[in-house]
Image (tube, rainbow, N blue to C red; front, top):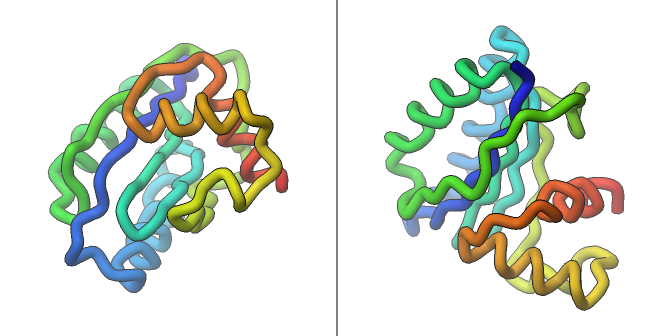
Length: 137
């Protein structure tokens, strides 16, 4: 079953920009083999990742991700069945969102509130729409 998993985590203080580049490079290579797509939003202190693919594949990947010392306080925000992928051609898209999230893209006040809730690990049915919008801007 095609599924979508969203998690948030705190970036380790020892995780460098070179480490993030390495994560993205490895993701593109590995995810293409497993038919996994998605995006990674990151700042100096946090990660938000969306994974799309067969449920078993993305859960296995998530279990592997949880063991990565480059982040901690990993929190599953949502795991849902989906009818189609939001990011069908991206084995792993990425965007550095900085620390002032609301100023980097055109989000309404309500969308900013939902995004901040997502950063705190609060589930929202609107989360994927906001992440998708961030990647369109």
